[in-house]
Image (cartoon, rainbow, N blue to C red; front, side, top):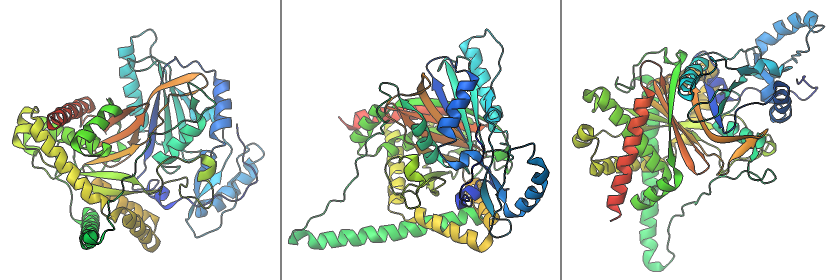
Length: 507
C-alpha cells in the first residue's frame, strides 16, 4: 500500500491523454498475459510485487485526474476526512478546468480482481468463460476515484494457457509503447534473470546514392521527384484527414454499422499466431517489409470476411485508421530514461493516426478465396498504398495541427475531432514490438501476450504484437455484430494465399 509523498507537482494531463479521457472518447488498453503455470501467487505477495515493481515505475500508477475546478471543492470536503483517510490532494494552479494528475494513496487490494467460475470444468468450458469475462470487463468503466488501472487474475486453464492475467489500463496513463516499457521493467528473462530482455533487431534502409559525375543529374532528378511525391502525398493525406471529420465517411458494411454508441458496448475477441521467420521469408520473396505482409493479410482477410457476410459489399469504400508512434526511436528505453525532462522517448501518449484505404477484391478472389495470383495483386496494391504513406509528412503534421486546434478550441473540441476521425473509418490497426526471449515474474513464465483496445467508436480493430519469434494478431469486434472467430479465420486464409503466392513468385 503506497501513500502519497511530498514531491513536486505532477504535470498536466498530456494532450493525447485528454483526447482519450473525454466525454467523446474514453479508451482502455487490455493486455492479456498467458501463463505456463497455474496462477498460485499468494495475495500478499502480489500486493508486495505491485507495490515494489508497478507503483514505483511512474507516478501515474498512483494518481487520479482532477480538474482545477474540482480541487477547491475536494480540498474543502477532505479537511474533515483526512483524520480517517490518508488520501491527499495538493492544490493545483492553472486555468479553470485544466486537468492534472493528482497523487493519491493506493489501496492495492482495490485494484486486484479475481475471476470466479464454476469448479471442475474442462479447459474448453473455461475458454468460453474467459472470453465472456474479457468481454464484460471491456465495457466496464474504471472508477475515476482511484488510479486508472486494474489487474484481473483468471486462475482457470484454457486450451491456450494454464492461467491468464489481464492488465487493464486507461489510455490516459500511457500508450502501448509506455505499457510495453513498463512490462519490460517489471518482468525478467526466464532463461537468465540477470540478463535484460531484448527486442527484434531492425535494419534501417538507406537510400542509394552515387557521387560520380555521370549520375549527378539523375540523382538530382530523383531527389526532386521524392520531394514532389512527399508534398503530394502529404497534401492528400491532410485533405483526407480533414474530410473524414466533416463530410466523408466510409460506406456502411458488414464491418461498419455507423452506430454512434459503439464505444460503449462490449467487445469479443479472437487471436491467431504467425511465425515471424515465415513472415520474413515471405517479405524477402515478395520484396516487401514485414509490415506490408502482415497488413496485407489483415486487409485481405477483412475483405474476405466482408464478402462472406455480404457479397454486395465488395465495392464498399473501407478505410483503416492506423495509429503510429511519433517517438523518434527504434526500441524501448528504460522507465528512468522515459521520465527525464529531455528525452526522445517520453512516457505518455505520443502517437498520431493515418488513413489507409483498403483495396477492393477482384472477382475471382472474392468468389473462390483460393486464387493466389489475385491475392498477390491485392497485397501489392496494399503495399503501394502504404509505400506512398511512407513519403508523407501527414503523421507529424496531423499531431501538430491537432495540438494547435486544442489550444484554439479546447481539449473537448479536440477530442470531438479525434472521435469523428475514428468514427468515420471502418477499423483500427495498431501494433507493438515485444521481447524476443520468454519473460517471467514471481516464477510465472509468460507463454503468450496480446492486447486489445476498448471504447473506440469502430466495430472492429486489429492489434499486433511480437513475442518470442511470433506475431500475435488479435481481432476485437463489437459483440453480436461481428464474429471475431470468423474474421480471424479469414485472416488465416488470407495469409495462406499470400504464402502460396510468395512461393509461386520465387520460382
